[in-house]
Image 1 (tube, helix red, strand yellow):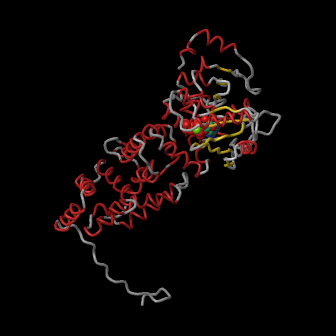
Image 2 (cartoon, helix red, strand yellow):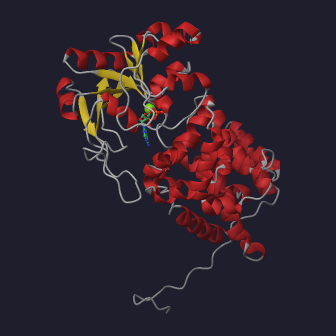
Image 3 (cartoon, helix red, strand yellow):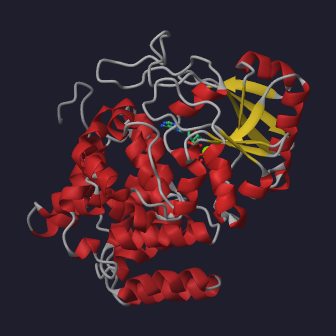
Length: 463
Ligand code: ATP
Ligand code: MG
């Protein structure tokens, strides 16, 4: 794809093609308009919906480009997840062009335009973050963190608010031109992830950018360079200033990218994992982190595999794997049999989730499922004959069974137990009944009869 770009004549041509740089930069990088012989893209690589949106905006008299991850991924010959369009039309003006659209977001307003089954995100050029001096830019607090980013601007301002050079390429399909202000194409070619501007300022403005760096390195195999890695290590604690709800979204993007294992090691190496999940990070021993015996790594491998196979994944399974050791450690503080008491496990589950949720907000709809997965483990282990059918029909059976398999692979359980549950799912009805009967005969524990409770008087005292 970059055949033309390797050509020294073209390189020279590119270097000489200097038009406009950022007014505040000591070393302004030229805006470069690159034709198809250099960028190698084709509008036909772009989804029909995005092409339609650009066409309509241009026909209405606005500028419109593709930008960000979709341009980067096309240049890397990867299939973009989605196509983002950026324009000089305001969100209201975009809405007028597309009757089937709606404005979303408060901190950062964008328009969702529906074209057939596609939803294209259209945003308006924003003014940059690196103070232009004569204008109030995006609002920042005293630590330099961005609070609002809704000041509209032009394309050559918009580029400087973007995080990495590889994410700041504009593809104007109406003229088949790639617009590169910051050397993003060279960085893509060299496989480098580089911040636009001073890395520490950019991290301070928005510490999530460290997580984004990890995500792009893991997903696209781009190198961060040792300086940036050191910077992340030294400033990992800035993650604490990010709203927990935003971190939840980022964590899911990180671990549901299909590269969870690589992501995990990178986050740990940069000290970011311990900032996101302090208690889980402290709980891991050597065995937990081994690909052979570790439930964390086994869980991440399993998720990566499912994503590659385009099978569905659920957030709760991820957290069940990440926090299991911390929960077990809390249970193990109890003596003898109480360690495995379901109530002790539930208490530990609530405690661990409660503490970890302070950094990364795990919504209740997710944490409830995490607890159900853990809670079902003891019932799957005990195999009370009368409970088997109920368990098989339980809405969390699949997730709990998958978790049991992981525990078995990690050496926490007798593999025969996991095999038994695999087996019974494959049997027809008479086969199932036979297996349950065999359990009964084998003396599997029956549920202990509870002594009837003494009724309480309305004032709550035992009568
Ligand atoms: P993905 O393929 O994962 O969607 P992406 O780069 O498109 O990657 P998005 O979150 O969709 O990521 O963001 C779109 C673009 O918006 C980015 O490419 C980048 O230019 C800009 N952007 C997003 N988040 C930030 C941020 N925190 N700081 C600066 N720029 C950002
Ligand atoms: Mg994107």
